[in-house]
Length: 202
Image 1: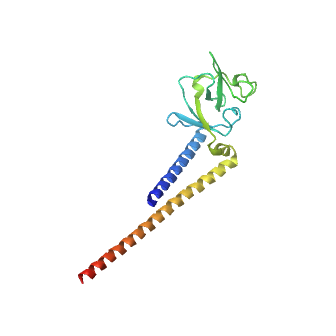
Image 2: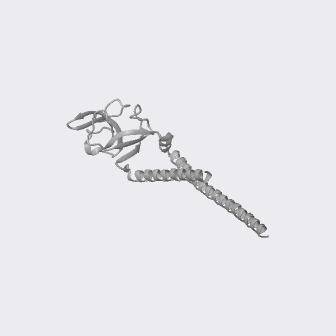
Image 3: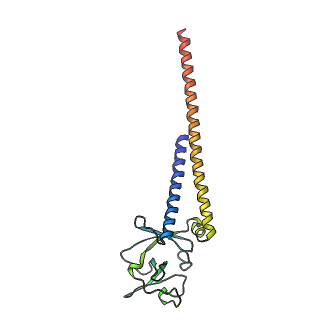
């Protein structure tokens, strides 16, 4: 029973370690390429502004997927034609020129802005997908948004990995001790049985 529990804990620990490592690798590749990597058709990104505050708070991770058709009120992720930023905004109008989009926390649409962030009507080939879910992942996104947060996350990841290694070694050590104890008890029982047999022969 104890050995079974140890195996389960070991499996959970290793699974968490693998997930963490994969997550960090994908984040690193995404940052290097400056574009999210699709996983089974899905992509994820970190929201870095308050433009969709009412719907998706800053620091949230969003999950999105490419669709055949986009409709009014869809929250989409599109690539800016000018600086290639990824923008997460809602479709508020569909015209013959393309989609009109707007952040729910903004006063005007992206197409009617008068500053450097004004966008043309969004074409289909600019859209990476429709948002199908979001989560703050226990505040992980907010940590990543500040420079010291990256260092803290890296340190936490290293500590976590070292902790998993230590747990793994401890389980191995306990298992070895258990086996040695069982072996000694078995040898003791065998020795006892042999002594009993010798007495009977006499």
